[in-house]
Image (tube, rainbow, N blue to C red; front, side, top):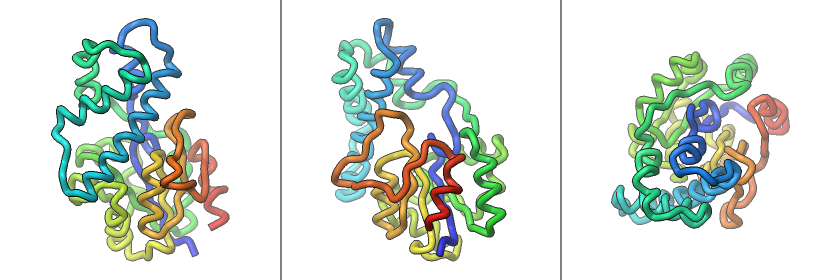
Length: 232
């Protein structure tokens, strides 16, 4: 029986404005197609998920500059960028630009509907504590009974312990919970915690590696979430 719904934040409940894709498209110079930048973003997210998984397993964190260079390498390969583009893109990859958040379409309505059904709601996100302010500003913070942020918890998805921690704080079993996220490694994290996953891919080029396997449910927007959860 479903008792709890856990959510990711970025590209799930909140959307960055401007997005990483928009900033790369702006900064990398003329001649690029927006859809190619979307494709590069999708591939870079897979690389980053794999890297975080390696760091979780080994306890060895890649140096920041090497990490940024590796992310740039994905964009460089997909988009055919020259080496000098790294200087313009480095602050984008570091999220060192003015950015705001807006609520994802249908977010408030979906959360109200779930609350009305008596479900416990929580957030689990690889993020900084500052994102709490964005949730407050967009009127979403009050829906949640627990918010677990990686930098506060010292745990990072896809480590399933971060979902287990959220369930512990909510007083619900993992088996009675579901995780909603945009990243393929959100699926891996959910399955590691023995809960089903609802996947809402960040863009049309995002794919799930075979090593992870499919989510139980795939949705295109939060408006479809109620229908997916009816089967749980």
